[in-house]
Length: 189
Image (cartoon, rainbow, N blue to C red):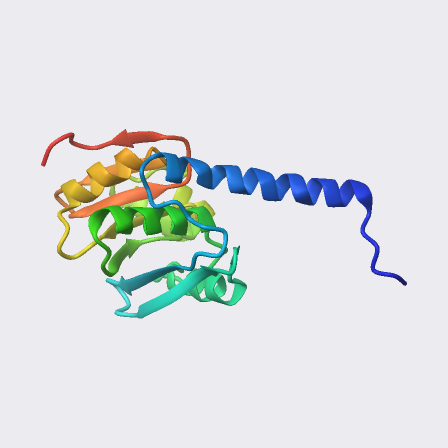
């Protein structure tokens, strides 16, 4: 059979590509470096609970790199259960723009994907854990960047105008997610 595309499916695919591109536009408008179509985007991570490190280009030649995304999915797994899921790639773009604003550096992962079991355990021990946390969907990460105060990291994340930003100065991390634009936590350190 010939490799013909169904016109309606092709239109849906093009529409999805266009909408995906639009989701990145606010990052450039918010003062983040404009990402050229072929510009490589790379990040460096250290997981605070597992000790694992990864420096990886997740975007190259105008597209996300599937093998890199798979490695990142594993790195950002629920370290308590070993469960992994697809992480929203927009989260990496937010982290990339954030690192550009803060001078780069290795990102320390405090928490990323959470399985339902882990989220329930954390909720039982703390009233600050959301029942429908975006961590459950692979759309949230808690981070810090050595050499950058979490207050500065929070301010830079808020300035991006992308997703949710939670500030936890006592626990020394910033929560980032790809949900609606909002912020919580103390306004000053």
